Amino acid sequence: MAAAPLPALSLLETRVLGVLVEKQHTVPDSYPLTLNALVAGCNQKSSRHPVLEAAEAEAQAALDHLKALSLVVESSGGRVMRYAHNAGRVLGIPPQSVALLATLMLRGPQTAGELRINSERLHAFSDISAVEAFLEELASRPAGALVRELARQPGARETRWAHLLAGEPPSEHSPAEAHAAVQEPSLGEIAALKANVDRLEGEVAELREKLARVFRELGL
Image (cartoon, rainbow, N blue to C red; front, side, top):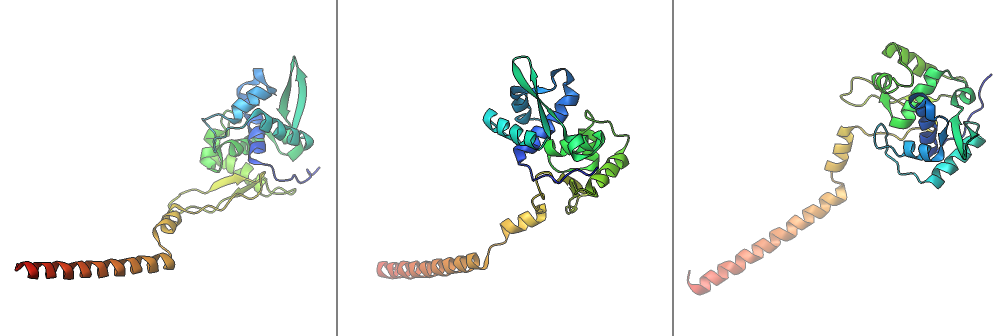
């Protein structure tokens, strides 16, 4: 049964979902997670890109939206509520694909080789070709692509992949393009620089004339 299309999630919502998938495998004794544990996972300084500083209220709002989409389920554990993900079932994808999506949501765009290494604790892929096979399935999913292969950057040997749960990834400029954008002045800036040079040359000529007159008056 094909999964229904999902609305684009926010950055924090994808981070929440990624953390739930990650902690299910890395700290199973603490899973499902409390809100405090979830916030700590979202705000980790390591293995995260970008690094966030989400407040509890923001994380709770993200959880509420994810619950409405059935991507997160809430359970009562002791004195506090606990949260678990339901990504595989809702999206209709296997655990291997969930692991790759979570790694992309936590760390941003990566190559297949980077994904194999970074998702190792979530699923141990036999080789890079296995990772690529699951990425291709996610990219050609009948219900809608969940990942996209990004354009190869100049000088890079491999392409990177990005998830699409938050919509289309922003366009990226290569380092060369970024350098050119910084280094090349606009026509207006060139005209302003030329005017400044002309003005300075005029002032220098005027100072030279005054200095020559002073020398003549002093007989030097």
